[in-house]
Structure formats: structure tokens, C-alpha cells
Length: 187
Image (cartoon, rainbow, N blue to C red; front, side, top):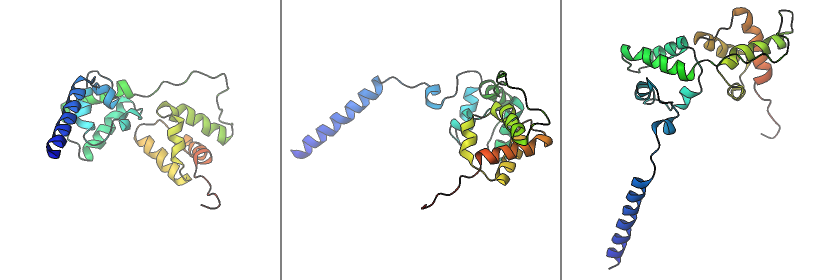
């Protein structure tokens, strides 16, 4: 008798689960992965989300050239993307996750060539890095000077428009403001 009651309760619970799942509103694909619906989204979902979550896509801000390079890099790493899908993917990604426009002038004078390295590095950071990234992404890194140099060089390979003359002041600024945190006593 106990088995019958246990079985009945189990079947009833399963039935309630099925009924509630059928009546619950279903999340759209965009609500699930954060990718806006438009031409090319199905190709991106089908190709990119097999290997990683959409948050890696959403946090990046690349030009169409940068997205094309990113797609080619993924192909080199093993992604199987048809040649006919590359252009629609790059178009979609650049349209929805392209570079941010430059921020409006804040009324402050632009850094001049005679400005201190710190001011110049900050201006380069604000005008070049913040086109694609938020400050919090930079602040999470906490890299050494060599680490920041490698990171800046990687960003240049990915399409950042940082000149050789801008590289050292930028790296100095990043290291000074987002370098490794000092160790605290007792840890």
C-alpha cells in the first residue's frame, strides 16, 4: 500500500511539473542569450554559442574589420564556419556590438604633446580603449607593466588604433592605475 501511495504522489508531482512547464511563458532566444534578433543572429548562435556563452560576444566592441579578424581567429582555432556565413556574421556583430562612438567633449582641454605622460596616457585610454570597453573590464585585469604591454599589443592586433608613440604612455597609465594590488599583511 505504501508503494502505491508513493508511486501516486510521484506521478502527481511529475504531472504538476509538466503542466507548470507547459503553462509557463517561454523565454525568447534573446532573453536567454542576450543576442538581439536581426539578420545574422541565427548564424552567430549556431556558430559561436557551440563553444562559448554570448557574454564573450556582448562584452566586446569591435569594428567590422575587428569582428572579421575575430571570426578568422575562431576558424583557425577550429570553428567550422562556411565562407558564405562569414560576412553576415561580421555584419551582425558589428551592427550590434560595434565600436562605441567617441564621448562628447567634456569641456576639458585635450592633452597636448607637452602634457605629462600621465595626462597623455589617460587621454589615450579614454579616446582609444573606452571606445570598446567599459572601465570595469580594465579595472578587473590588474596586470604588471609587461602584462599591460602584451594586452595593448593584442588589442592593436585586434584592431585598436593605438600608434607606436601612444603605446608607452598608455601602458604607463594602465600600469599606474590598474596594476597589481599590493599584498596586505596577514594574507
